[in-house]
Image (cartoon, rainbow, N blue to C red; front, top):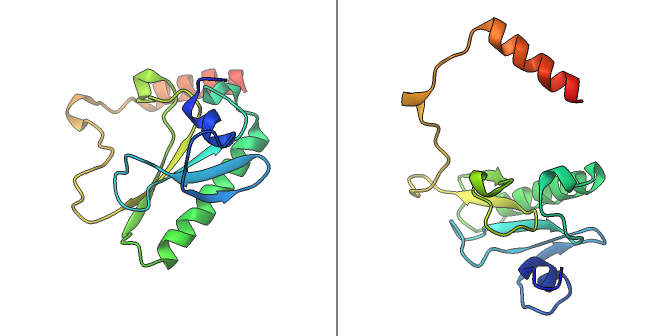
Length: 140
């Protein structure tokens, strides 16, 4: 896509601090990081949503994210843990509609995080879980 910011990075029309790259995926530093070392892993081809992503490209993205995680842990960048985050769709928080996987170094008490609202959740019974599982299995 001509106006996609990530496609423009892939085409080298926009500057990026590239961490890793192969023929299918590229990783670069996030310009609005949660913590230092926050890296984005994207497919070089444009896929707006997870439903469009070929499984082999997803494997390449995750493989690169694992390598970046290891590199972060070996580096002198402060990193007590990591989050791998992929937001799919605006309701899930996706803001750039070129699929991307965040590798986020985490620090103790860094003030960020993904928290579940336990006050509004209830535990479904086994019958409901089995019914939901069957619906997912039917779609496989």
